Amino acid sequence: MFQANCTQRRVSFAIFAAAVFSILLALNSPAHGQSNEVCWKLKANDRFIIELNQTSKSNTTVDSRETSVESKTEIEMSWEVSKVDSKGNATIRQTITGINLLVNGFTRKKKGETGSPLLEVVVNTSNPAKTSKQGKQLLKQIQPLLNIPIDVVMSPTGEIDVKDSTEVAKLLNKLPNTQNLRQLFSPAGLKEMMGASSVILPQPLSIGQTWNQQSKTDTAMGAMEQTETYTYLRNRDGEQGQVAEFSVATELKPLDSTSDHQGSSLQGKLLSFDGSGTLLLDIENGYFSSSKLQNTISTEKPYREKMIKTTVSNEIEMNMRRQK
Image (cartoon, rainbow, N blue to C red; front, side, top):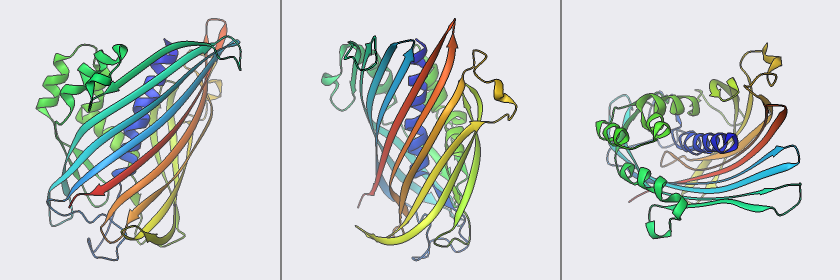
């Protein structure tokens, strides 16, 4: 149960945090929209398709018994810009149009052994007939939330304001066991994730420049300080013209420096974290066209007289394309 809950929380957070991290990037631009600026250049009636693909692998060890869970998640979203005001604030109607999920897990008594199957869950919203028996309940909870627009206002500096969706709230309240979904789709939940995951590019910005951004992240192990180090690497030729290439390296550590006793309580302990990736911005058309991110986190948590050790690795890829 511990592994299932922790893996679900990490995977869910990673998927949506990665989505926002990769596509809701903005910068403070004094002359918004000029063709040579490295910034968002959204226009009214712009439409985009965003595809997110994540693979995740989790290994949990208790004594000599190891449990492994592998998952693949595909999410498709649409963006429609309804208006952009004189200050560059864009009102975006975001809609999740499809979610496909594949989860496989197995246990083994000793490291290296094949082990026995633990679970297999398939959820396919585009072709429900492919959904497994174990995934049908999740499919029923997800389907009503598809194709419901959620309005987001994004400023040129990356400030985000998520508008209330009465329709989403009513649907969530009708569904059983949807506390995580309620939190995720609530304005507070979306704003928290978007605010923690977006980045404001400094101005002026030049190739070779490096800067940091820090944020607080609440985890099962307590409050963590997340530090992202960005570097503007270069401009290079892309499929649609010049693209700006950025790298990011992420560190995670306990927010309270006195928490050396982490792990001696039921809260658990962060053993290690490593995160990195690249992002590409289409300079002429003014949007982040793709990103590739990866991270690995290792934790341990006491359980009775034993210690549970877990390592989760994620690879997330985003592709964003403008519809003509």
